[in-house]
Amino acid sequence: MRLDYVSIFPDFFTPLELSLPGKAADKGLLAFGVHDLRQWTHDRHRTVDDTPYGGGAGMVMKPEPWGEAFDELLTPATTVVFTTPSGEPFDQRLAEELATREHLVFACGRYEGIDQRVIDHARGVAEVREVSLGDYVLNGGEVAALAITEAVVRLLPGFMGNAASLVEESHAEGGLLEYPVYTKPPAWRGHEVPAVLRSGDHGKVAAWRHEQAVRRTAERRPDLLAPSVLDDGTPIVRATPGDAGELLTLQRACWVQEALANDMLDIPALHESLDDVRAWLGEWDTWVVRRAGRLVGAVRGRLEGEHTWDIGRIMVAPDLQGSGLGRVLLEHIQAVAPAGVTSYVLFTGAASARNQQMYKRAGFRLRRDLASPPGAVVLTKRR
Ligand code: SAM
Image: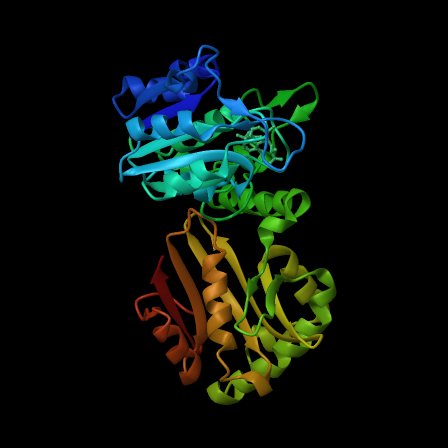
């Protein structure tokens, strides 16, 4: 990847020689070019700004120096990143996208910004992204360009010593913030490392981390837990303890049908009490759908060991069965599985033909080679 920076303060980019981007350049993954915009001016004062048409405070960056800079630097393979507070918000997804480009040119604004025609012109020559670092105003685009660079460069293949570090961190595929992390010593100034992290039980560690990540995300960034939405705009939202009563009712209604289809009453979902439902709500990642206030669908998932996502209790109110809601719930619970999950597992009644058909259509395979409770079958799918 090649990175070029155009700025009236090229000294801002000295840190590129340091730290992570510098390491990437040493490894041959990157090449940098830093350019003073004033080299493309032709007057004695090396002017890059002028007063705004229409009046108003401040100065605007003139188009001519930018035009000449772009004539030299841009090719059809270039992506020009204009740093601006009115751009699309920079996030991990955008970092991932930019990491796939072969040439980025960062155009760093100053004053009140760059004459709009520069951006319009660049669009005719190369790909253009207008990118904001966040909802605040900086004095210039240099710091934004450096931040974007650091987030992008660490995603380049071969850059991180351990690529797994990228999968598990905040804003990675699973969409959750990272869980709290600890190192030695086990006790420090009266604060203990949680016992589960020292238990050596990888399954328990993975489950604890997932639970902490969900909790932290819900507390600090509930917007990241934005619900999936059904075709008609109805959201799938995380269940709350207050949903326990309705879940119990829905569960009974659904599993009576299961009992009839399988000719057996010995099904746990049929016998659970309200306290049982409250208890599993605390242990499973449970999602519900409401229509006109009524709880009409639910699904739950949790980690079994480190890499398996156990899916269960897919329930759809009897009057909505066959509407596709079960399929959407199944897709949703797979999508919210933690990043380290490599396979899904679920159980259903051996004679529940309709359920089995839905799971098979969703890519699950019947696994007669695996143990299952009496009267049930197990199905699995690779992620
Ligand atoms: N008048 C502009 C506005 O209100 O949108 C702000 C101009 S700002 C003082 C000068 C330059 O700083 C911008 O052209 C842009 O390059 C950079 N900048 C400021 N805030 C930024 C942000 N949140 N993200 C990216 N770049 C920013």
